[in-house]
Length: 345
Image (cartoon, rainbow, N blue to C red; front, side, top):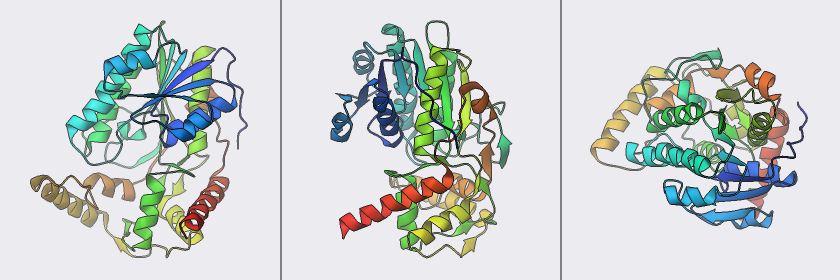
């Protein structure tokens, strides 16, 4: 486990897009603890964020005028906001993830903001095959089974291509972000587990990277520090995660066991899950059902295939090492789950 490094004293005021979300909030908390002034832009006000001293600016990143005002007077922008998920129209993903990112870049130019750190995803290189100890030399994917990944490829390219002497940029690619306060991955797993709707897809032996949310925030802050000082991160993307990948289904069952949910024992072949996903996708599109199908081809691949990455480049350039271990993160997560259960009882 690593130890936190101090942020450069020259970083004084930042803008965090999506600062009311899971990762954005973790970045804001870590920065305010270091005495950095934070402004958050999002579609709502966030009392919890305001309570720790951050300024909330309400607006849509897809609106250029909003971003121009939001980025005024800051020295660093953390662009975290994105439309996530594995289902939805290309128009929605394009407007938020591509046009929104272009607006962020343009707002940095207009306001002469010198640093931009972008929250990306390993999905930008997922080529529908196992990825074993992949590194940043992997090419961008060219075929996509979900619009999220497709839009993030375009957006990351925009950010890294924007890198120059007046605007230094880099991208952080965390995989499967989890931890207390998680509104996405963990709640969905717990709900599916309680309803006994989960099946192991494939052999159940696939290895994946996971990223505790505090480690993700720390990596972003290390990137900002690098861009301010030695600048070796400029124009680069970085995979980050825990020290080691986990066997995905063992990790899920460990979570279920600690949360007193029956472990997943039944299974379905990858080929069957992929086929079912394809059928459901066709049906949902044909019937114009906006709700996400229980299985998609992309989800089948994510649940069955190995996808983990080398973090050596992040270690070398950023000095990144996880500050929260997987075991400690699981303990914190379980405490949060139990605390929420007690509130609801």
